[in-house]
Image (cartoon, rainbow, N blue to C red; front, side, top):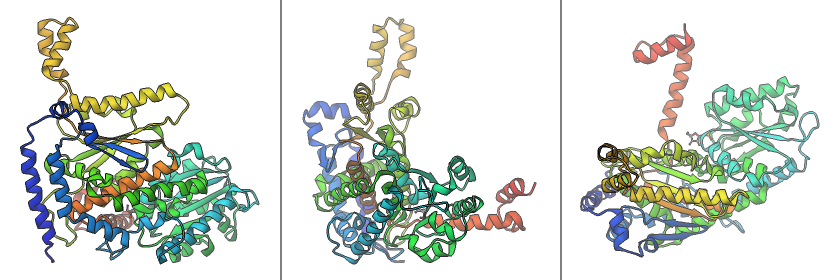
Length: 542
Ligand code: F6P
């Protein structure tokens, strides 16, 4: 095994960062009191987004050390490698060129040429559906699109379509089915008319169990409704980098939109995997999404490290992960239309950073990715925020505030923003024992009551958060936001010196499911663990 000396150096640098952390004997309250310009000093701008990272447990010298660490990790070199199409996915010997999917103008490279051709096919298809020229088996227009896909072939388009609701095209309804649980498909199809329904089978590999089974059941549903084998071409299209498997399934060659091995599943919404977005919201809206992402690509590729927003977000997260024992990280968009954003981010972050070895295969001596979770504010305030404020763990938070209201209810929007800011302020300030006592005394509690109650009312504070301000939830800003987090995750992988573009454990799970499926009908191998054997017995054989 090759020894990657970079990992060894990084490990030593993390030890230095930890030493620095152990000397952090100040509080956020003190830092804000000492520097009236702190908010302005820790604030960055990127296309359509402002980041206030002043509520982090850092001083200028911390930032200097973190930036030095990023330089040691050769981050600029790695960003160049990403954009230039080098094989940054070292275990699969591939580039990760999702940024090439968002190019504008005249294609310059073979990748861009392929993307331009695919985009033009997508556009024609969207027009045919919208103007009613694409007809189902009985001659009726298509009114319902069902996207069958999972992971990256589902989460991105699903989240974007929900976010861009005001742009929904009147002529079609787009639905998403992902789960192997058949009720996902049957519940979706329950009220849909087969003759005006079209399925997109979205699978880069075209071998994913969930997608294959749902597609088989969907095909049967269509056949049961009187659609002949030859007419299926009017009701099934595919997006895949495996056209042979898609054709073997029965999708007509001309109905297959290409994907390429240089597009990772969790980075694929910018490819034809985004077809449901274009169908739901129109091609111009889809293009605006790409434009926003492209603007963020330029920011990431060209902005110096200290003003680079994805790098800053990665460094903050890295700081808590390596030096403060933070094992989880929450993202809290104050926007109902972004309620599915955390689920999309979860796959992006956890599938990319959930690794235990460096790029050379050496075991990491420091922690890698953490748990990413979250939900829309203000709903979370009435469920899990209690743990953020008074639990024993430090959980860094990204708040996402949207400046312009997404509804005509301006008064509610003002309250929404006030709620968002209130949470980051309470995380920062907390409430000391003395303050708790004072408040109780002022409200007329007895001495004994004050004594008993005050400790429960203490809120530790000094808990870190970022606040991102996004101008509004439209395609351009959403594109920029998604690309921001894609690049943050890549930057984080550079800090760890790992490959963020593979996901080998998923393959093992798939293989194991097949073995168990076979064991359910046949014999259970005697060398299997007794728990799995017992569960097979209980579930399938009694
Ligand atoms: O979850 C693993 C994964 O490989 C993801 O990376 C991918 O987005 C998903 O499965 C779906 O894969 P496919 O598009 O090949 O069906």
